[in-house]
Image (cartoon, rainbow, N blue to C red; front, top):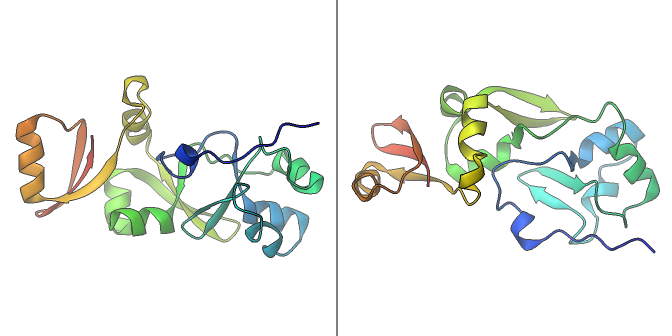
Amino acid sequence: MAKKYEIKENEKINQLYFTKNHVLGTEICKILNISTANVSNLKEGHIMKVGNCPILNKLDLELQPKLRKTMFHPDITSLEDKMCLSYFKAEYGINDNQILEHIADRIETIAGKKFIVYSQDFLDKIKQPNNIDNILYTIDNVEFEELKTQNVLKHYYKLTDKKYLIIY
């Protein structure tokens, strides 16, 4: 019997990027020509809702065989260098121009969902082996100055005169 896969608490969105095992549920639906409800209505533990994007994991052996097989279809887009735009904007309160200027090469649409395609520089900063527990956060200029004097910032991006995106 196949081992039950369940999304771990730290996998829910504790990370800033997806792995090779993550696939966009709406892309599977598009390939299979089925309703997105087939993916969106999966039970808790079998789907991550990231912004408006349903994300599935290839390691989940309890998904329907048809869905699992399609996860390995050659037309499935790798999400390893991407993040859902709606999630990123809501979570960090930054606009498309700021995203494109500081952290992304472009914004692309996959199966009707918009994704940030991270720049290699940004990926290198958040995926450094010694930075496993990186936290991305937006702060104002007063908080920024406090953290800067404490020497706890790993990287930062000045978004406006009063707003910073930091990695610490």
